Image (cartoon, rainbow over the protein chains, first blue to last red):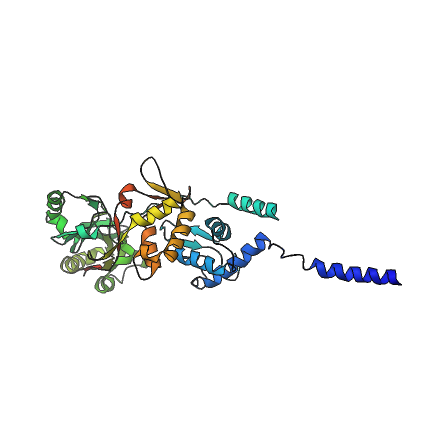
Length: 106
Length: 275
């Protein structure tokens, strides 16, 4: 009887601890997709039906910085990792071409 | 998890898209040294005696009537008056300047046939209606007009006495009194941060994305360096001082440009009209 109670209590304790063993680091790909979705929501809208549109690089950097969680530091490497595949450079150096549609998260 | 993150980044870094060609943009113009004479406006590139010549007076010049597809055809060129009057060569030599030989606007956006010539040749099949052709500098644009042989005298009489090319264009120039942005202090901050470095040709070079990101961050943290009340405006002017190589993903600022000030443009557009 006592032995069975300890087993049940032990299982409850394990279950409670397993969901609370410090903050699980966010999957980088999931974080990237979340940030991309957030960035796209903050950019000026594309024309209806447009597959790509251009925005100021300044606006893209600003949107990225605003989408970071509190405590996260913006870095050039992280900015590039997040925006790679959704933004291309243009001949006009102050503009970037956005190739992901809003809501796609990239 | 760190290994997974590193692998993800490594894979992403291998997936860099390589656009087809290196991008080249025109150097910035130096509006203070603008020269205007005989319906010609020359604006040099920064630090150079070379730059585009804009014309504010054009004329319609016929290249003669010829036979084509059983019809008669005339090509009309919209050419700067200064070239016919031989004012152009003396303008160039007297001022010691080099013409970049660029048309200020595209033919398709600036030129169209007049309503009168369209009505006069409305009897022609669709493919032979008046059509705007691209210009070959200094000709801004050309107009091809087909007509029937029996209509030649009346059509040419009309063309020779009327403007049948309608041209409306605006060249986006800046007021010479526009404020200026000093590039040096911004460059200095980016060199200190390791974003830009000087190459053997004394050019400032950096990774395009790093330059874009770090300079935008600098505009947000030190907006006074970018002069304008909205740092985005100053930042965009700063970025235009670079030439990007889209394949190598590098941003380059020439030593000449780095030593200059960039205009924060107060628009003073040049209007071009004909007809």
